Length: 125
Image 1 (spheres, rainbow, N blue to C red):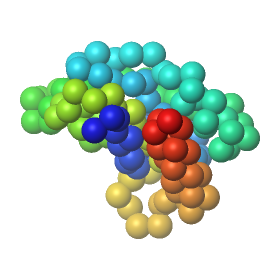
Image 2: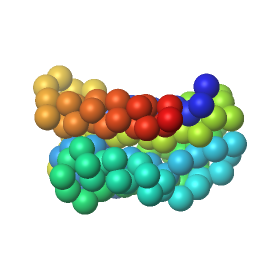
Image 3: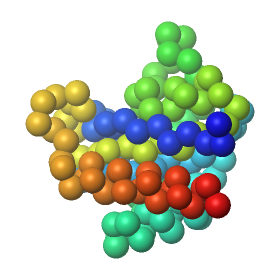
Image 4: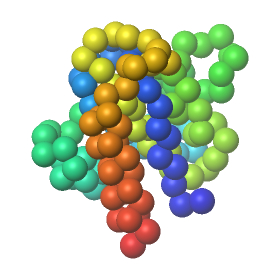
């Protein structure tokens, strides 16, 4: 596996208050790396707006069940692979439960899906 895009609703926090989607820094082998300029450029191309990112803490890249707070499960794949992992978070402008019915904006989901397709196309080159 060359890389992982981990997609999750990330709406129940005060970290990202933006309606759309945001990406995380790359995580590889237990290290939080910088946000990829190539991934930011693809996001800008897809949305026509400045890219939006969300921060990570070391606790976010540890396994669940260890007593530490996590932003959510978005970065859990990084605990099971040595491949680079980037979180793609569908977000909202206000704190709402990400698992609630009707909370996902169809335009945000479509943009996030197109983003993932473009990243996969470029990453495969």
